[in-house]
Length: 565
Ligand SMILES: [Zn+2]
Image (cartoon, rainbow, N blue to C red; front, top):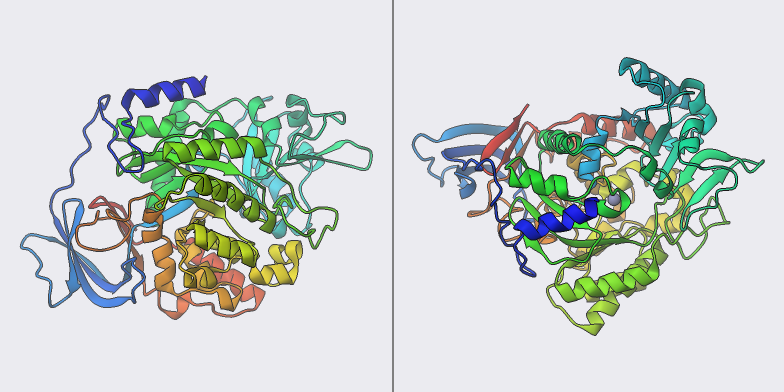
């Protein structure tokens, strides 16, 4: 049903013009977007302008309406009379941060679900679940959804099972998603609701974990398709509210732009692109968004909403042991990961998208998946060369040398998530256990990719959604040889994020004439508080927790203050 509406509504008000940003006609707008007026003078302590050049001290930025009118040394820039002054001395001023890989709509919706990111034991998960059901007075039989448990943080060192959840929720179906999004634990009621029994075969590319008697344990890997259709979909209004909640969170983190990589029409048909399109149409979208789709389509949109990247997937995640590797997992020699895509469909849709002039994004984490993703892009470009494509590989974590070279030659964009290394790539951490020291050492090679001239937009994949933490992780990469400078990391979170959606001419850096999207953080990011304080696991954990608690001091979007601490 959604698919149908989706196509219909697109035809109604999208102007299609390949390979360039055009306007979405606002014929159905109920409200006119307010044009920002007035002048602001931002007196910067430290300015990192997004271009990658070294940070500057004592700079003044003049904002007129929604654009940057001037940037220069304090004594060279005249502050116009009547300008509102924003005193950011002692603070760090950046372009509004762009998170190039999120699952934004789903995150917004799930902000209302049980949050398990802080759970440190299965006992805490059970306690959280019990409280959630009772405080929200969730009726018998109603679904309960939770998210972001991470077995790496659980003192039991294992995945929660149906039996754990049954103890506190015998009457409600429960689905708790792991932090990677590739793994879910269901309780017995949920298994029943989804019709999963000992005789249910594994779905293509997925696994139903079973105990020694052959009974499902409740843990599913890359088998979301068995579950989602049985959970009542959120209403359209809930999704619209989800966007508003996620936008408010983004503003509080200094984030002014995102790409939603969910290809919602496939992996979560209840989400769809429609909530974005409706929000934009009603001038209720207060963030610059790019939304990927599952269908080949032309590039279209305006400075608030663009569409036109086809997303396909090759593998899963290292955490779920479904990232596709050439060699077996170090902790489980029985598996090299899982090919989750449909190779024939992938070939067909990439060719179709290439012909339409849209863009392609391919999820690939393991070395073998990266190779396969490059095969798809290479086939398309060899059949019909296209010099200014913005084809991207999402994650690109463990490419082998030959594939780094191939990607460089093809001009493929490495869309990467530095918070992954901040979370999991420390010695003895989850990546080390899964892939072993040799692959760990060559994983996520930011320094090398930048030196080779790669375009490298950064995103979070929502683990967690927090660009400042991503910046910290990139400059403090657990492999010292892969670290990049603060200015480079900022560029990856700003101008590179604009580049990948063909908007580098209008946003992504603090330069005259660009859109006035600006994030200001307390303190100087060049200070000791932002550098790795020690390599003891405890010291690392403490510093990470401190960075994750940080919010922006002020966020300006389109010339207007949208967040102030
Ligand atoms: Zn993702």
